[in-house]
Image (cartoon, rainbow over all chains, first blue to last red; front, side, top):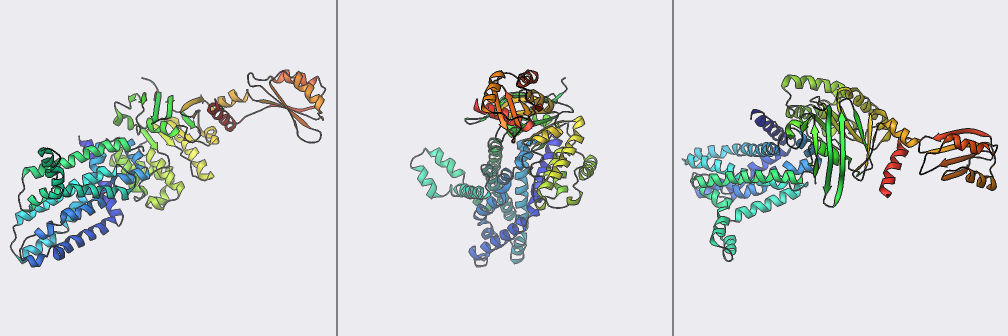
Length: 248
Length: 318
C-alpha cells in the first residue's frame, strides 16, 4: 500500500510541477483571477447588490470552470499519447489506476491553488461587512468539488484523442451539457418522451442545481456524494479509456 | 527455473484485419544480444511492445525472468528497461529531473538513485546537458537520455527499439560499444534495420517480415547458411564466343549459368542453382575441359544485407 501511494505521489508530483515548468500555470492563474474578480465586480454587480456575501463571486464559477477546467485538464492524456511518453508510463511498474489518479490529483490541487489565490476577495468582503463565513467556506469547498468533477471529466475525455484542442472542445461541450441538465429547457424536452425517472435522473445530474444548493449554504450529503461519485466514475472510465486507446 | 530471461511463446497480435505478429516464439538468455531485423512494418515494434507489457498479445505467453507478464505485470516490468521507438521523453523536464522521475518510479531509494544518476552521467556521457531542458537537446542526446532512462535501474533485460536511429556515425559507434559493454550480464533485444549493427553487436539475429519469424541464427551462421547457396564465380582470361558459351552452359549441370563480359579479354562465369548448392570442384572440372585460363574462382559471399533482402523478399512473394 505504501509503495502504491508512493508511486501515485511521484506521478502527482511530476504533473503538478509540470504546470509550473511552462508559462501555463502563471497565465492560467492570472486569467482565473482576472475573470473571477471581473465577473464578480462587473457582471455580478458586487457593489450594487450592497450585501456582504460572495454570491456574486461563486455564481460565475460553473461558467468559468466550463472553459478553464478543460484548459487545465486537456493535456493530461492527450499530450502523453501525442508525444509517445504514454509508452514509458505504461511500461513502468505502475497500474493505470495509479497513473490516472496521480494525474487527476495534480490538476485538482492546481485548481485548489487557484481558488486559494482568490481569498483576498473573502478578506475584502469581511472588511466591508459581516458575511456568513460558514456559507463562504462551504461555497469554496463546493466550488472545488465541482472543479474536481469537471477535471475528472476532462481527464477522461483527453484520453480519447492525441489532440489537446479536440480534448478541450469535447470537454467543454460535455461540461456544458452537464451544467444545462438542470434547466427547464433541457428537462422539458426530455420529459415529453421519457419516463419520469429519466427526467429526474437527468435533472439530478446538473452541476448547476447541485452547486446552487451549496451556494445557499446548504451542504447536504447528496451533493457531496454526487460530485465525489462523478469524480470516481470518470476516473474509472479514464482507466478503461487509457487501456483501450493507449496504442492507437 | 529456466535461465531464459525472456521466454515468449506463440505470440500473436492483430489490429483489426491486419495481422501484425503471427505466431512468434522468442527466448533470450543472459549475456545474449538479439538483433530484431525486418523491413518497416514487419512487426518488430509490436513484438517489443508486447514483451514490455505495453500491449497485450491476442494469444501466447510471455515469461520475464520466470515471472508471467500477464498475471503479474508489475513484478515482471521491474526486470525490464525499455527504450520505445523514437525515444520519447518529457521535453519540459531537464535531464536530471527526467531521469530522477523514472528512477523513483522504478523504486530506487535516494542513495541508490544518486549513485545511478552519477553513473549514467558518465557512462552515457550526459554530463554536459545534465541540467538542460530535454526539448533543447539534439537528437543524439535525446536518444542517449532515452537509453539512460532504460538503464537507470540496472535492469536484467533491456529492450531497445532502434537505439541508433538518427545518430551520426560516431554516435552509432559509441552506442554499439555501450551495448556491447553492458551486455555481459543482461539479456538485450534491439531492433534495427541496419544490418551492420547486427553484425557488430548481436549474438543472434532474428529476421521477421509480415509478422512471421523467418530466421533465428547467429549472424555468422546466417551468412554460412545462405552464402553456401549462393553463386560460384569463375573469372577467366579468355574471349568467350556464342558457341563456347552454349557449350559451357550445356556441360555445367546446374540450373543457371551466366557469362558476363568484364572487359575485352576477361569474362566471368556465374553458376547458381535454386534447388541445390553448386559444387566448386565439379564446376571447375567442367570448365577445365575447355582449356580456359582461370584467374579466380570463388563463391560470391553474400553479406547480411543480401541475405536479409533475399529472405524477406522471397517470403513476401511466396
